[in-house]
Image (tube, rainbow, N blue to C red):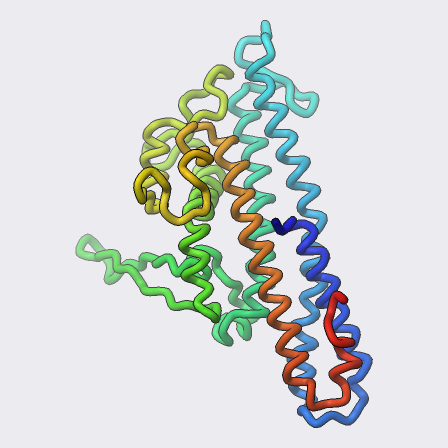
Length: 306
């Protein structure tokens, strides 16, 4: 299975090799117009963004360890009531829970947003890849989830759904939707709930309670809200839109830490595969179209990464 951190580092190296090689032959006479090599060079510059993403995995690991430390306080007897010590500071358990969990999901989605941006610039249609002000939106553009826009104004206004096209080639959107939609949507919903809404949204509390004994267990109403907004459905006893078997699925535990650990593992795998496909396809494009130039061997040496 692809290790996403390693894949990011390897893809950054592959793009840097292409970028360096293109600059090395820029002064040569080529059959292909210089504009072609310029466009390839601009995309290959994304190696810098990928290389800068690798360190975020270390930050996420540290944030996850902080969450785990708060979780371990649940099993440690204390005379301080509902207060624990986090980072040398004594605070209420619910505060520490919110503080660490928000940090963890925020860093996680920083990684996902950066990888989606790179994949979009490399492999999306020109509407996205050529728009410097528009990054690929993970749910709307990768999964094709519909966005709701309000039609009209005032009391008589209505919400209408806008159809989203497939911005990635080779029918990839369907594959991502069938295999990863459920864990991706749940993670995104939890991120938004924590970062933008705090502990409550539409009158629903995220967690079962605020006491140490409540841990990270989701409230029943939160589970219901997430299932509705993330399009939860079953095929037999298996959740639709993921690769997990019913026996392996952690959703039924109601423990958000177990759910996020498993679901982020799935989403990590998705982005590792997506990034590998996008970079390999981009390198393959150069190899195929630069073949008529004598620069093709200088550019790729037969295959980047060999």
